[in-house]
Image (cartoon, rainbow, N blue to C red; front, side, top):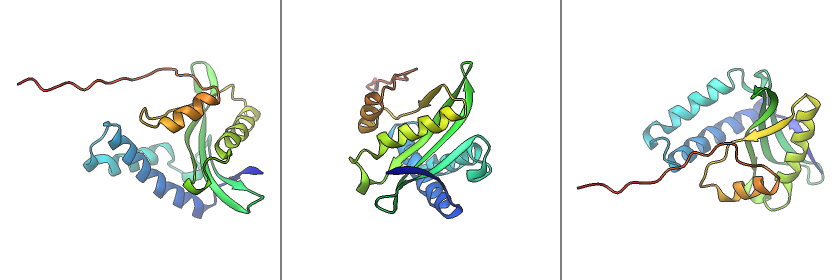
Length: 160
């Protein structure tokens, strides 16, 4: 059975280190940032979003804990915020460890997130997903998420 455990200071530091690196790499892969600037920009974004670490108001940083297996299997970070006249839960990160994927943990984590957020007055859940992350997009669509806005890009051939 999966449960949400608030991150300890130690697990938050592991999460932060891994997440800053992953976010930097995803932004490079998507073409938004250069490799040279990515790490610094990613660290700055996390500092802006979580200036007080896991104690930053309105943010919830959880380890996903499987009580049956007695181990953490992933992480979840979301923030309660006002957007478009409603209180939403914005998911900044959900990550199930590679060795724990395809076991239903992500779906169960979203169910727990929805309960947690609804108890705090949220009426919707939103998230961002990189266009190249097809497995995540399939998961979110399967959970009933729909696009709110889409940024699209087409590469141009050089003119000589």
